[in-house]
Image (cartoon, rainbow, N blue to C red; front, side, top):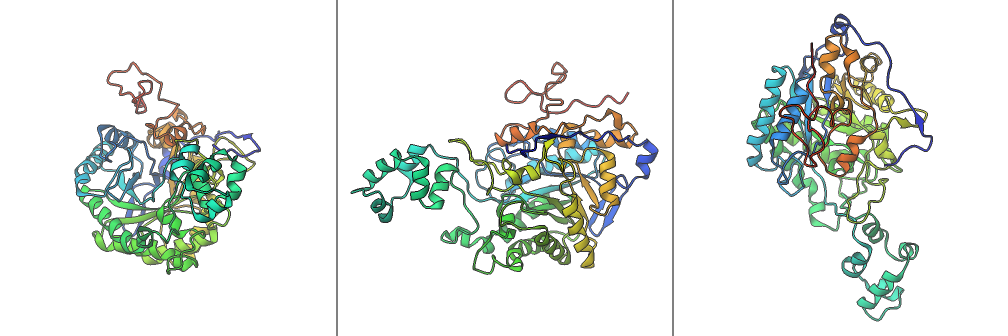
Length: 482
């Protein structure tokens, strides 16, 4: 994982916690009514992938238990993890690309309703992603997978393709970098990755034609499963965010200028809105900044968000960074992970940071984006996350006009009872996230995600379920309220 070179260790907040009466009077625990979006309080658990589904994308008991545990804290809303809209293999990631997934997803809805007493709204994040492959072994790539062109054969003065391959195998990386095309060298050193700009590929050219209906079908299934709404995943390293990015240079009317880059995400939103009922919530998760060279800026994001708001989107949840372009090169046999570079750090900063620190890195950009939406005449709610672990931080974001709703991701993982503890005036009992990104390390390896604050605790409790490695509990111990 990339870390800022300054290596400054920061501290989590030591502000006093509110009494139950003060919490009840706070903005965080006040309701919000904004069009279709109605929450009893302004707390939000963003989507986090826990790697608990089957390899076929089916809901398991572990998935149901995961969301039930968050619901016991009764946050205002929970967003179910990124769930694939296509019915294609994607490992232990939830899918919603076929009607057969609806009954399993309905189990999550039922569990959350029961555990929260119907107080927590439940949304599901729906995502599309392009193909990515593991970094190949060097010799295997050069001997089997690299296309040998006539120009390449001539460049190494080889009489045949086989001879050219042997010459290439004998070269060092600097020589290969100078000789191979940029894309071939990337495929060798980082693994193959599709881009929305691969216009030589028919299925990539056709994305504007195919994706709106695919997302619309997924949203219909979410509604059938009983969810309160969907969150369109327009963030990080995935298809829709790649269309929004300034790196999108497509020349078919879906790339280049801001309005063109916005076109497919907006068409997809409209297709989803038309496919679901009038009261069904449709929002999106998008980036406040790409945080990479040549990527989209906060000005781009303010434009996109204002246009989404004018189109009638029900909420906008802001994240930042998390891109493939600056991710660290994976080891052979592993896939590139978009949260290992500087932009990934912006998405999930750690306690050891730069001068700015890991808390509130998205606040300034969020304030500009929310102000732009308000200037456009819209009141679309903005969800802001990023290192929020204390009540005082949340209240400040709300008071400063950076946010309407506060997202607690890693902190909710560290303590699913955070919301109930603070509501009752017992914030001193909160297990505060260490921001070591232990959980991120598990996510990168597609291992069942847990938190180091509790995954080795009370392992001898009755009925404790263990992760596949047999060493970690899968859920946080329940809070003893006595």
